[in-house]
Length: 68
Image (tube, rainbow, N blue to C red; front, side, top):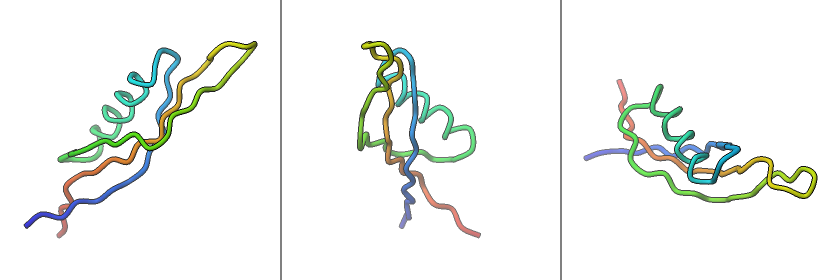
């Protein structure tokens, strides 16, 4: 039997929402093992001078929980 933990992280990108999600996954993967699923919960953008300046995503990320 396996146990999984969920955390929420926010990623940003000046290029796209997809790039913001990839940044979350790659960064989390440096310290968390056995990443399983990334679910995008919210997406928004920061606007400056009438243009999109930053893409932001809130991601629920699951990973296998190892104890002991």
